[in-house]
Image (cartoon, rainbow, N blue to C red; front, side, top):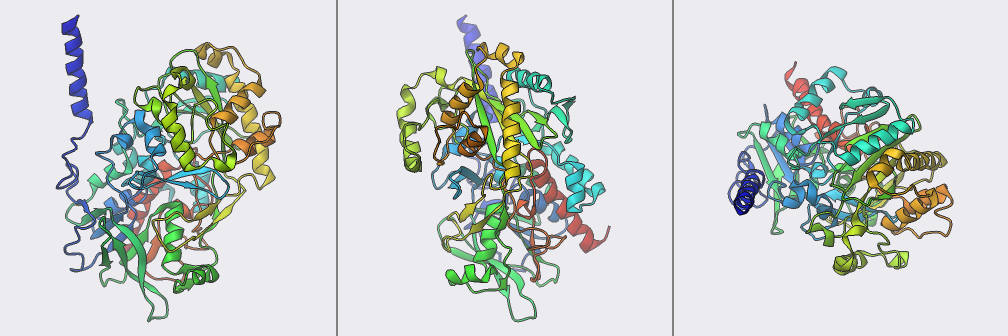
Length: 578
């Protein structure tokens, strides 16, 4: 028996060596295969010759965009965060929630709270949201592609380019199988099997986690770039875009950024007329940077003494987030952790998804699990206005005495698709590293609330199905009891009401959380044109989800990565010819 145990231990060590990048990697080139990734302070030669493209943000869109453009042109990527490769909290599925719970200044996930009182997160690492999300991969609907006016042939070339490099078929756990069958029993049919396509019914989608539970982010798409023409600086935070305002129209000529030591640097475009600064900083970072650079509502800019380069009232407007509500499902049996794999795409305008098994590891049981928390009664005794970050952190420290049974279970998630409720983004200061004030106005439009109620009713049917109760070995609970448990398990700063488990409308309002699919702030036709060039300015473009008026598919990351590749190819074709 001892020899068998030793053999198992050796196999475990071998698996660790194969799957964990050595921490010593990165002292020189950060990671084998990425010699072009350097720290922000490594700015030698930036003034020599200039760049054809400066990409602000090495995120979900920025990485594939940079790799594509570097095939023919000199590209500089400036990313404010670090690399994901040597960060186990980013890399491994079992640590997914730990990154979201990390509120430190160096976390890969930047914590913010919308003015609505909903806790949220944005990527602060190479790979952006693909480095901190739940990994689900599913394409946009054909309707979305037609709506945004993209070339279908080029879209269908760009998706597979992403999929061949970072997408995998999920292992499909017993929990996911039970929820799949519960969805079919609830009438979300047909079953479309495993597919990347957006189809009505129930399906299993792709994932960027491989069979070992290792995450493959958009940062890995950089490996296809031309290392002779590509430079990626991490810990390089762009402060503002620099413009030449002597001509008829303002013209972007470069950027100012700070390195990890706080030292300021400048990077400039080459003299070519078609050279561009491309902002890919996401739905929060892009409108914020445009305003800090002098493009935005004149009155807003003047409040902070920002010189106005271009008065555009629409920058930061039309912000939207898909509201999500969850039902926590206790289980009497251990539940292996799985993130989003199964989805029910309904004609009600809601999507039903599922995840399970948070906190099952020995290390993670003492961690706050981010915005999807299975801790029963978490913070329920603290008045809503006192549910601060400090209160959450204090709860984490006190959680070691909670029995592991409190963590067993999963969530049924109900997301409202294409919300009609919108809000705005405003500056609170001129520090680009601070979060702006973001308002989403959840359920301000009655149609969103109506769809949320329909989604919760459907989720209850799934939870009460024989397939789910057989798996959890739990008796079927009343809807009111399930809602009561769920209100306690979710974290937000919204005051709860006495009837929030009796009125589904009130439950939706009180327990709303995010699924990180926020978008808008730089809409096509208002801030950028159909080619994503910023209106009224030369040599400046936006390529990210801030241009979307709705979140594509059940999860946007597939389309945002595809968008980076698509826009890169389109720029190459427009500049070089087909």
